[in-house]
Amino acid sequence: MAAIETIVAKLKDHIGKDVVIKGWLYNRRSKGKIHFLQVRDGSGIVQGVMSISDVPEEVFSLADRITQESSIIITGAVKEDKRAPGGVELHLKDLKLAAMSEEYPLGKKDHGADFLLNNRHLWLRSKKQHAIMRVRHAVVKAIRDYFDERDYTLIDTPIFTPAACEGTTTLFEVGYFGDKAYLTQSGQLYGEAAAMAHGKIYCFGPTFRAEKSKTRRHLTEFWMVEPEIAFIDLDGIMDIAEEFVEYIVHRTIETRRAELEMIERDISKLEAVRRPFPRMTYTEAVEKINSLGTEIKWGEDFGAPQETALGNACDKPVMVHHWPSGTKAFYMKRDPNDERLALGVDVIAPEGYGEIIGGAQREDDYETLKKRIEEHNLPVKSFEWYLDLRRYGSVPHGGFGLGVERTVAWICGVEHLRETIPFPRMLYRIYP
RNA sequence: UCCUCGGUAGCUCAAUGGCAGAGCGAGCGGCUGUUAACCGCUAGGUUGUAGGUUCGAGUCCUACCCGGGGAGCCA
Image (cartoon, rainbow, N blue to C red):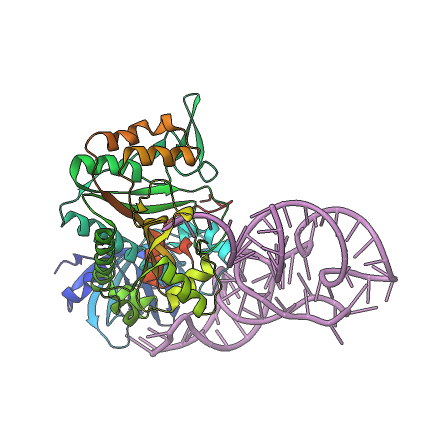
């Protein structure tokens, strides 16, 4: 009977049969006349048991010599065994070496952040990082499925942009054939144009912020998904944001429970994320935060301590709306009942993960928007195309942006955003 | 940019101003059910850099470099 080539994740379908697995040696525990080889293949880790009596002498001695992370091809019979991590193990009949690994830098014990980041290309192989990347994939897929199932059109917005939309200090400037261009910090303005063409759209891609932020909640390159919808008001936007976040969390629990358990996430906290989410106006939120013992004056934007205090006070994401206009961008529509307020909403994640969504109803009146651009000292000429959207069939519209890394960090319960993206770009760190 | 903590073996960390050490990893040997296996042995150091104080500095002082965490700003 020829051995079947398969992957570790599917071993339970082959109990009693001979299989071939291609992978890397994760760890070895040898006991004289028996070797226990932990082999990872990307889909999982399986223990291969090699007894000296079952294999030729040269195979047994090869198993004794191979180093951690050497690439190997193993053949063996699949056996259920309670003693094996994962429930099944392989009784090895053959072992072939693809390439012997040099001394592997990452050991079994803890490492520091600097060392791990310098070895990010190898760190990705470790169990926790592997699990986080799979959760990230599930989150991204949930995001796409949510919009695709609801008749949104995916619109890819440009990464090179001609001018600043929210001030130049936080933009990366690049040369562009003798001219200047900037890396995008949001696809929103282009998304608005696309929404006037398609009704409901989303853009999804990397965004760049040149903020000199050196905290666990910041990256200079991060991914953001931004839906934009025509004929909608702030309440409608909040309804969508709420349903969207609930959908992402529960789809991820469904498809990645094993990974969340592996990284020891308290899944019950995620299961509690069900609509409706608490909604409060900015003014109500300020009162609440002050009553919780964290100080804030009306008119100030929330800092990390305020977000954390508010987020910790609830076991669901909190939606804060009707912000003082001074804290928000020029394109947000003002509250018709109170000019001091902007029709914006922030969604703050529980457990101190901070703002995961920022959204708003956009200003749809031509004259008002033009006035705002001038008030913000932005070059009106650069925004003529954007003003055109108000000249030619303007409608109430809006949307929001969700930060993928902050969402993944929250769902995984990991401290630092650097672990939620394969190759993090951070202040003063762009290797590997 | 500011505040704060740190930099000692490949990695993680110890060392009252007085002989620079352990665990892991590596090498060698032992062990037929190990779970970050275990046991024995071996190798491995310009203590971030430059200066200073001192009989004597990893330890105290000054400057600089690098990194972590945080503030501001934000997803």
